[in-house]
Image: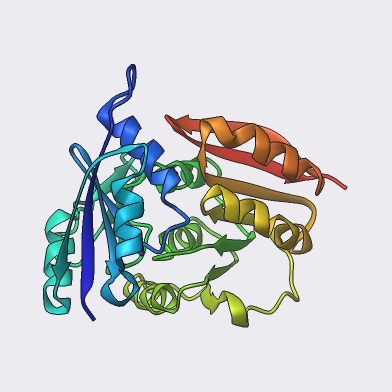
Length: 279
């Protein structure tokens, strides 16, 4: 399968860094059919299956109010992994957690080292939304808890949750490629308590003590009734994938399902919301 790589250079806004501008653009593009994004020095590269690419998408991006320049190129299937791996560097969290790929040498100085083969899945720890949750898991290890990793991508969050003592982790995604990639990563990390499900096949017959959802805002709002159904009194809900200017909307909607706001963590312009089910 071939992919198309869109290089997107955002219009830099006054008072914002290039990285912050790229983050704002990324949030705007979450509803488009890109499989993943890579942040570069002055913008983004979005990857999409060639069969899903079309002139309508190209013109939509070309005339997007936040995009200054658009270019695209076809990446043959056989070159995809090489291109991705060349840009993938280890992620280090508070000198305790290191996320690396197979081709990186191990570093035993870290208490927890996760091996992730990223492929086309989102969730290597590079993006602020994932990093915020990795950091919070270290601060609040889910020892003995039943954990749900919704929108799992590579399952990096679920894998770390098990290594930090979670009793059971269910990882769920809408994308079958993410499910396959997650299963591979679970095996690489010798995890025994992480199970992976495609959302359409996920049975809603259980509840969790911690639900983690690193998904863009619109999907978080859409899935709030699901999080409610999978919660008991006292369940903690961690929501990432949210920009600071959207947090009040998400908190207000979550409160309608009896999730009470506890605290937030910010890695501008992204925010992680910590809520708790109060019945």
